[in-house]
Length: 356
Ligand SMILES: *Cc1c(COP(=O)(O)O)cnc(C)c1O
Image (cartoon, rainbow, N blue to C red; front, side, top):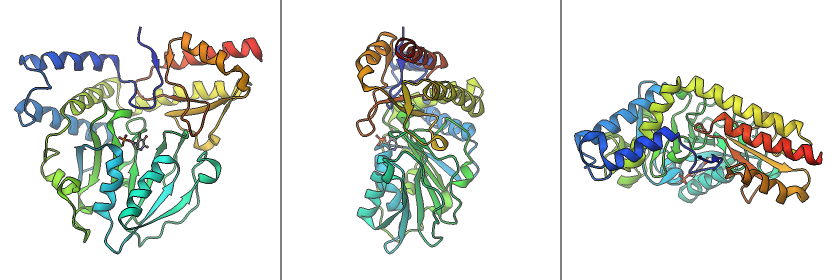
């Protein structure tokens, strides 16, 4: 039996996708060749790339005028590509610092030019989302992180601004409906809701590109990747193929609205238990709680070994918290079934029955 996999990333993907992907490794689409040994310029792979891009556009309702790119280097390379493409030599960018990833994104921009943290929740170990800050309209762009994978917070209302809006959506893209037209550039490492590590998804408004006075190295230039349809060099073919399968699965379930409802149900189930069970407490501010990564602590540390043994015995894996928060983190990405959340809730109830 598959484990109840709460890994923060790489993470759970649909079992059916694993099956299809493993078949394609042996014999792709009945052509007696593996997906891993055909040219990325073959008709077969170009179909995969086209379909993956089309599914991203369909599932997220991407408006006209945006390019969908599959790049490499993870979200971490986007931290650098964004300022390279959008920040002028004498320009300035502002960053919302809501956690470790946001901080890393800021660091890359600050190494290249003039970047400023406009608001931060570092004062409370990133357990909330700052609000009420003003974004100057004369900056090159504003950067935020929609979901804070490590600290378990999520932006519910994005700020309004005339500046270009750039967002790292690595850990909540495809989990809920977003109005793509409000963003100028979105990026996400594939390994949290889309597919295996290796590909990075970028959705960029075409008209914002080619405006900077900076010289951009080819591999970092979004326009070059867009013009060559994400085939400037060999793309991460397997990651893109499995991403395509995951998007087909998502579409087959009923699309993003159905997925969102399922994610809200799962989150409600677990947060209700955390809030009603005296042995547990959440770490994030209520209004900013993430639907994807649920962070919580035991109220009595002495029960740690017992609780750990219990969830291990219940076939649960990957809920140990990140070292910077401690406690537990249940990452509930799209492919995690509600039954898996129920399995964890049952263990928490069992612990309370013994000790509360
Ligand atoms: C995981 C994660 C990253 C890092 O992604 P890589 O693909 O490993 O570079 C960046 N931002 C967020 C929000 C993440 O969750």
